[in-house]
Length: 613
Image 1 (cartoon, rainbow, N blue to C red):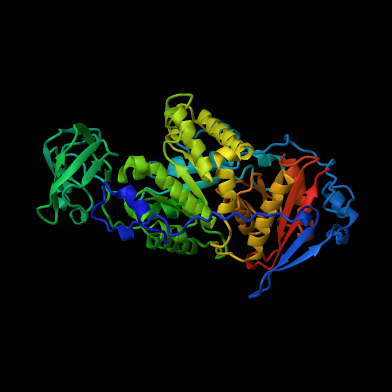
Image 2 (cartoon, rainbow, N blue to C red):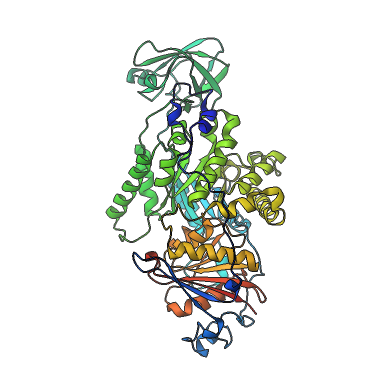
């Protein structure tokens, strides 16, 4: 556990009542020790790392002359259009026909929120062509009918996987269900029959916040405002702030006369609507992990086979565990196979308590979303970038994916070009080590959804190329190559960790075009991604579900291709598919990683280095 003074700096102006010993944002410190040396023989030999149960890793080295593919016949090579050579270091790929030119896709992924301006099929196809990888469904607003339409149109959009037909999926873009969460809101305004009425709160006047049910029924006024959080008076004290409607109205707490009411002074004049959001900067709120609506939405999402659940307003590991248990219980109720992958849980950090408990939340979660919207009103806004960097670094250190979200290209909601500051924001997220960056209103309700995705992809590409060409200035390429060491991973010391690290080192040494990973359950490409190679990781997977759940990991590009193919033929099939999709071309150096069918037990993982001819 790192010292508490770092996060205390973030909270000091708004959380004086919190104990400094409980305000550490991170439970993991980032390693800064580089250890990526590459043996000379790495580029020309085949390694099979074997790790028997409860035994240290043993390495067996086979030279080129040992013909690792000796069990394959000439007919096997001909089957995959690879000529008759049996040595992996000289692959004849001239017979393969590519439906697309050789390309090097961006490594950092784009999550795009789909809404009214982007849900129709023509626009959805354009967005797919522009390169977003994960569709976010915001269940704070989306109806069942809208979700059905968006999922159908995404499924019907043609992706790059059209180059490898008969795989059962036109594209492998994933779906993320973003829950509404247990929010705190004001009540309905008195006499607001249309839902559009407002009242004006005047600076300098007093207002009493009420939490009893009679005020919920009677309606709020400019002098008495109902808030639907019964414990409000217990988490506030004089001098603290209450923010309404994302900070449009600021209230200063004056006194708490009883257990139900809070008397405040209005600090600025503004109109307020019914059911406005409430933020309590610095207050240690206690909210349930899921609202009743969240439970209904998650159950519905499971019937649509969603791939990720973004849990809003996560406060501690217990909340993450509660959502995970609920998901598994519902899957059992719906009749899912016990082995079928559950949606990955992405915890949104958007409150002071979430920051305080970040270490345990990270450990309990499958990934993290840096949700800068609500977080920006919970802590001093000038500390958002600092919190972002710390959270991204902590995720990188343990090899878990992290998404940076909110207002990344906000001006493109109305304008065809972003501001220079927004470009710098996306660039710095890439430099920080984000696995993905997210578009919200830009693609959901903005005038330029397709342009927003294209622009973000251009920024990502430029940023990633800069980290490679000028590591002396960006620092991120050198820093992130050594940040993840595997020692804090749940697979620390495993064959998967050892081979993944060796593969990334070899990729840098040989300047390979791609790392091709043949995987059954996805753990091997995830581990390779954690070591942050600067080339695409082509993950050949057995089915669409495994592929879609790999989309959030930096650099991983899934392809369906191992089902029904015997293990010893899978590397050849993987090369064929990578060629067809344009990832590799004649003359490219590549690295091939294969895990046996029992990959999850770390029994055997193989690395080969090859040149495509």
